[in-house]
Length: 388
Ligand SMILES: Cc1ncc(COP(=O)(O)O)c(C=O)c1O
Ligand SMILES: C[C@H](O)[C@H](N)C(=O)O
Image (cartoon, rainbow, N blue to C red; front, side, top):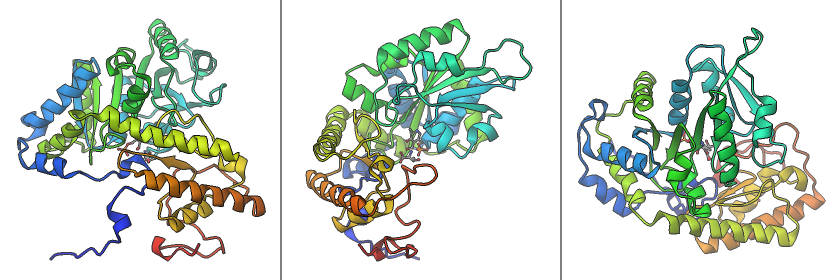
């Protein structure tokens, strides 16, 4: 049975999709590369292209081994579980961390871990002082769940974590028997923007989840990197959680296309678009939640009293797809889309002056564009049905 999908063009190209850098579409080169991929069973370690991808990324990160995971969530969850031994224990992270806010309580359920979410005192990233003020020491106090792993993100909310702060944190972790994991969903963006080699970040972390399916443009996958013993155990937990993949050579080859490509230029192009939008916001007094170091511009909807649903609909008016206050750029976004999202943003900002919106409850930076109600309060179930 063939299903004819009559999708409007905007659903096929990612050139106007600013909801996330996960929306890039595979290129013809990737699809052609998949046609000549190896076809071994990767659960038995018999797929050449999968092994090549794992080793290539591990080497770039200066780590002994890598493990191909179908998602960043799986990669993060098995990494953190692998670092943990005897409960009760806790994991300390930023209050916005994906492992805490967007992995469906995996740490509590899969790792039986308590999470200590920290609001950074500088508003942008945790410093060693923030960590010391919130971690739970393993001092025999039977009331606590000692902190055994710090999970940092780089980039975090689009911010490049300062290397010197990471060095301070790493030294303290080593002195205090703490493991250090990096959610590197956008570590390639951090490398491109800071010119710090991936290997230099890699030296600081016991494990890194390195996504290929975000700004790097692969359709699927992340590589978890660490030492050989760690990856061996992580592989065991990956299988337990249903992450064992059979003939993964095709998707590995698609990912390798991007790792072997001039990815820095692609990422820096997306950062240039974000920087231009951040400058535009500054010119027009539109507040941002955090510095636009890389490919994300986080509009401070609460401060601007902007309704995210109005912003989504104004986006559609200018044929730009948004989810909420985070404007995400990737290498397939056109310069023309940047000009159109500026119009949508400015109109939403002006609209808010006449119709201030008080965001009650948590600010949702990742929102489905087809949820909730439209300006007139009517339920929205079909993005094409938007009235704006
Ligand atoms: C910071 C961060 N970490 C992890 C993930 C999880 O990746 P995935 O969606 O592949 O599970 C995401 C999602 O894009 C993310 O933004
Ligand atoms: C939040 C969502 O899971 C995805 N990580 C994204 O950044 O779009």
